[in-house]
Structure formats: structure tokens, C-alpha cells
Image (tube, rainbow, N blue to C red; front, top):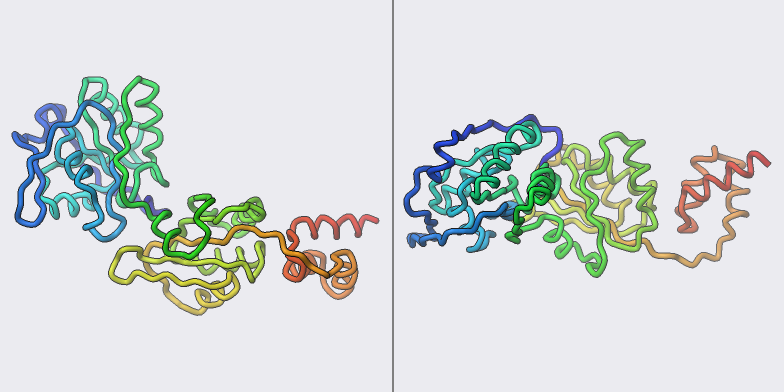
Length: 316
């Protein structure tokens, strides 16, 4: 899971001779507890290896074997990946591949694949290609006819979905919302009537503003959940309506940690309120934008549609 607004991680260069000698390792292995396990060789391919999103125990045996055996190990931040490698006794020198060097590093990795080597790709946390530049490498590998092999494991969106209490039969992962309020509201408006649980990544210093915008666009009473620091020591899942969560985080001060937040699917609500009569009444005492927002709260109808109706009324 890539993090927004961060500078590029430290790069670790890898010479061709080091790549060819598989980091100088004669017997790839990994360690669990005090037991060393020899890693079987992997076939030439690009391996997308899921890594823990917090708790380092959340990794599969297949992932460990692939990390130990692949000819090259590419990662977002070598410092982060080394912590995982050291935990499991994997003696590797990871190669940095991130958004700031994707073109040059991608060419090096493609050259390795073209030479018949195996390449393992990991992100800092979770499943590669979820909000990181790995899709470019996959696109190039597939175009060149190389195998791409997923090594499944931890996923922050799925972990949050299971803990949220939201419907899981249909969901949409929508990545990060735009940073600016206008663009963020437009994006939320486009997803307003989606009949699926909406899942977003969000920065801790923007979560309060994002919830305020979501409450105004989607309605204060729409159920939601905020999952923070999943699988880590201070893991927290807070559930409530968008209005309640917006109020909580607006008064919480300095929010910390990585965040996934979810919004319940759109549901049509029957209302005995005549929307036209309501708009006629509201527009007498407030501007159109505010009248549309208030009408949306009372009727459950999309604010965008109500606002468009008000504009037509004004023209008439």
C-alpha cells in the first residue's frame, strides 16, 4: 500500500554481477523461529508477493520461499523490506523500485526477466499493484510474453471490509480520494448511488475533511467505518454514521496511522416528503446549494439531482 505525499525512499543499487550470482547466496533459505527451511527454486517469472500490512506474522510460507529464492527482489523501500527479511532470516539485498525511479528500475527488472531470471516484487505493505507503480512493470512483462504469478496474502482493503460490518457481497475499492475538497466531493458524487460498499485509503491528516465532505455529499446518516492501524498494536475500527464519524475526527486532534475507511452501499429510501414542495419551501430562506443539501438529507435523494432541479426552477 503506497502512502501519498511522501518523498522517494532510499534507493539501493544492484550490479549486474550481483544479480547474476543471486546476491551471492549458495543455498536460499528462510527461518521460522529457530528452524531454517531451505527454499525451493522458483521458475523464471514476475512474482507479485503480498507482504504483511502490519503484523509481520501475517505472511505465507509460499511468500517466504519466493522472497528467498527469486533471482531479484524488488521493493518500494529497501529499509521497510529489510525489516521483514531480517525477521525471517532471508539474506537478500533488495532492489528499489518505486514511483520515483519506475522507468529506470523497470528497465533493469525487465532485462532480468528477458535473461530468464525470476523477479519478486513487493510493496511496503499488502498486495503489490494496490496504489503503487507495480502495474507498469506487470504491463511490460505481459507485453513481452513473461509469466506473472500472484502470491496472495494480506490486503488492507479486504481486512478492513471484514472488520467493518459492511456488506461484503459487492464492494468497490476506490484508492485515495482527491486531496482538494472540490475534486473530492465530485468523486464522491460520482459514486453516490453505487450499490456496493465503498472502500478508500486516506491520509490521517485528511480523514476529518474527507468525512465532512462525504457526510455532505452522501448524507449524514449513511453508515460508515474507519479502520486505523490494521493488524498493528493500536489497531482501531470505529463504526457509525458519516455525520458521527465526521464529528469525532474533527475533534480528535492529531490522528495517526494508516487508514482505510468504508461507506455503506447506496439504498433507495422511500419518503413521504414531496421533493418539489420541499425545495419550494427551502429555497425561500436559503441559497440553492444549501437548499439542495438539506433536501437531500430529508428525502434521501441525490443532492446533485435536487440542485439541478433548483437551477431549472430558477431559470423558469
